[in-house]
Length: 96
Ligand SMILES: [Zn+2]
Ligand SMILES: [Zn+2]
Image 1: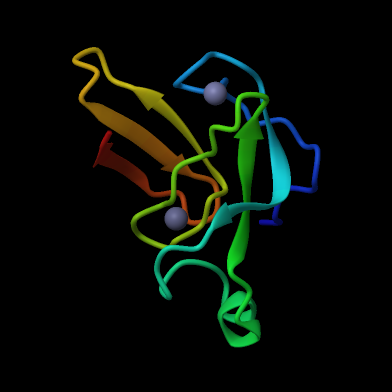
Image 2: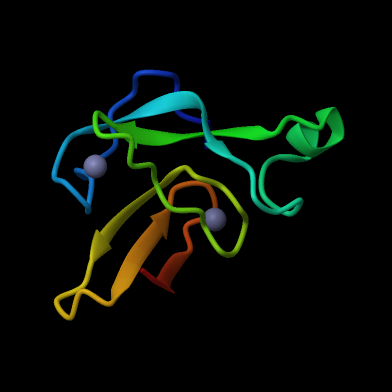
């Protein structure tokens, strides 16, 4: 399994605004030391690559492996995101 390349479209539209999302380098400021690849952590890079839409929304972090190589949608009750991780295959439900 390989990481997306910059400009690659996500398989789903932004769950917040419906715009197309594209893989963007350094799109997210890392919040937790856990998140990101080992190389990122070792280099101290504060930003992670993620899918981002034209309105600046970014993909959700996989709660299992920390990757932003995910697609998400909001469930019918609109209180949770379903997050599918393309890096580890995990299907998560996370609060909005
Ligand atoms: Zn958006
Ligand atoms: Zn994952």
